[in-house]
Length: 218
Image 1 (cartoon, rainbow, N blue to C red):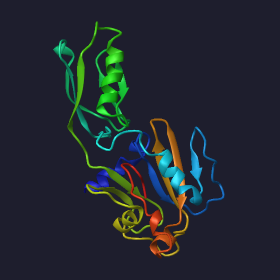
Image 2: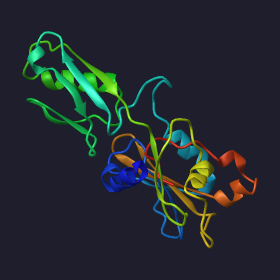
Image 3: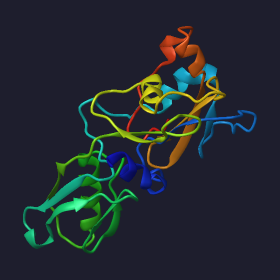
Image 4: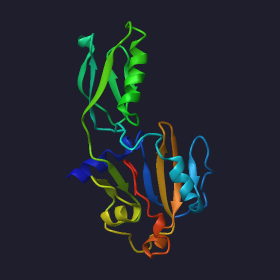
């Protein structure tokens, strides 16, 4: 039931996810070059893709995700405080006077700084704090020529090949040497990389079985 619910919201969530897609690609001839607006890295640039999409943060900094619940607490203007704000499927929250604000993809401290700047336009020296009171499990999506496509929540780290296994494995005829991994880069960019999953499974390129991130889709 959970898998069906998650998969049903895929098209909305994929727009803002901190990380997006791992998909099976039938053809790589239409690959777009990597640029500011996105693109696909060739297989030999997997390492560069992973470096470029690594979040510029310490490993213990939490990244807000869709479905999280946030408290925004004003210490001296308590009537503005908001409890358990839902981070919607578009990645935004709504606050009085400031309207919609993008929360997904930011750390609580980054969102705190953004909201302080916004409320400084209407308050003198706003003093607020953003608290994550409820989190959601990270999700990877597995699409294409697999036996059971859908969204798969995970608590522990999951690799590309493990995600394929969660989806029941590849179908006969799937082009496993052309797996496309698409991931959000920051808040705006979307990039991808082509991976030879066949070589990983056969033990020839096991070092390329990298760990997926929240909202990657396989």
